[in-house]
Amino acid sequence: MADTQVKICGLQDVEVLKSMKSLPLDYVGLVFAPSRRRVTAEAAAELIAELRDWESETAPRSVGVFVNPDREELAELLRAVPLDVVQLHGQESPQVCAEVRQAFPQVKVWKALSVAGRDTNAAEDIHALLDSYAGTIDALLLDTYDPQGSGGTGRTFEWEQIPLYQQAAANHRLPLFIAGGLHPDNVNELLDGYSPYGVDVSSGVESNGSKDIIKMTAFVERVKQL
Image (cartoon, rainbow, N blue to C red; front, side):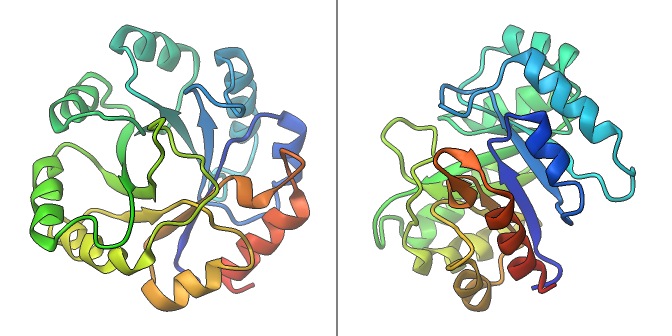
């Protein structure tokens, strides 16, 4: 799927980011929530500065991942780190999403939703949920349910549920990203079966807890059909 958007999440190291310069990425994610991939504002500012040195036409946009962020802390961070997107990965309500969007018009707001077991949500429930977020967010991301509420499980969810979310998202013209347990060896199955707007990968392109340029290259090439 040459048009599929690719986000690689959990970047922490400037040298690793430099090694990714030739990859046709659409987004890179920086985690500010509790996680082993968490970055400080100072480290994030260095990563953003590196992105700003890339050719503007090809540079990926930056996504900050937050879980139930405090508004003042978010304002302080955005002053230091000029992100393109704020991804809300906790239990943020539609009202909270709307407030973030209004308070920080310079960024897009994405909402991550957790998907648990098979047939957990009926179609009407999914439509009602997405109806509630309509007009409060710019994109939607599905991730595997995590009891901690922050994702990063490295496990896939039941992909059979994707079409219900796709239909509901399409009703509101919301781009839908799929995350959770993706890696170079299963992403084509996802693309062939469901043709999502975008895919989001983190642990699936790591070796020994660090981003692996060989795995990242393989993932991007398979998504972009290079």
